[in-house]
Length: 116
Ligand code: 5GP
Ligand code: ZN
Image 1 (cartoon, rainbow, N blue to C red):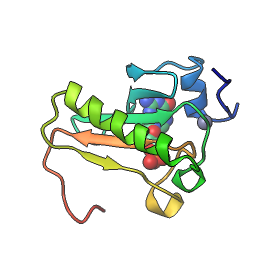
Image 2 (cartoon, rainbow, N blue to C red):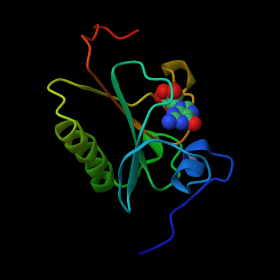
Image 3 (cartoon, rainbow, N blue to C red):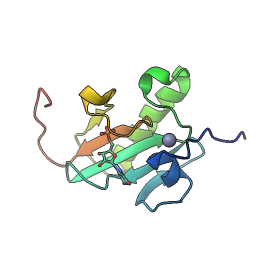
Image 4 (cartoon, rainbow, N blue to C red):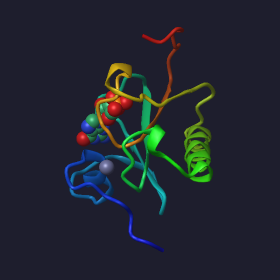
C-alpha cells in the first residue's frame, strides 16, 4: 500500500492525518467521511479522498472516482437517508472553498432546484 499524496497546508489533509479533529463517519484506505463543521442540512457529510487532489478535473482515475461516489452512496444507505443530494463544487465561483476534492452528501430537508 503506497503513501497518500498530501499537502501540508490543506485542512482536509490535516484531518486525514488526525492533526485537527473531525467527527468521522467512515474511514478507509482511500477516503475519510466527516460531518461538515457548518452543516447546510440536518445531515451534511463530506466524503474526501485520501490523496490530495485539488478538484474533480484533476482526478485522473475514473475507477477511483466511481468508488468515491459509491462510498458516498453507501454512507447514505448506512445513515438511512431516503433522499439525498451529492454535490461537487468545482472552482471558486461554483462555491468551492477547500481545494481538496470532496463530495458533499446533503439530506434531511427538502432541497430547492435550481441550487443557488
Ligand atoms: P466547499 O465549499 O469547498 O465545497 O466545501 C468545503 C466544506 O468544508 C464547507 O462546507 C465547510 O463548512 C467545510 N469545512 C471547512 N473546514 C472544515 C473543518 O475544519 N472541518 C469540517 N468538518 N468541515 C470543514
Ligand atoms: Zn488536501
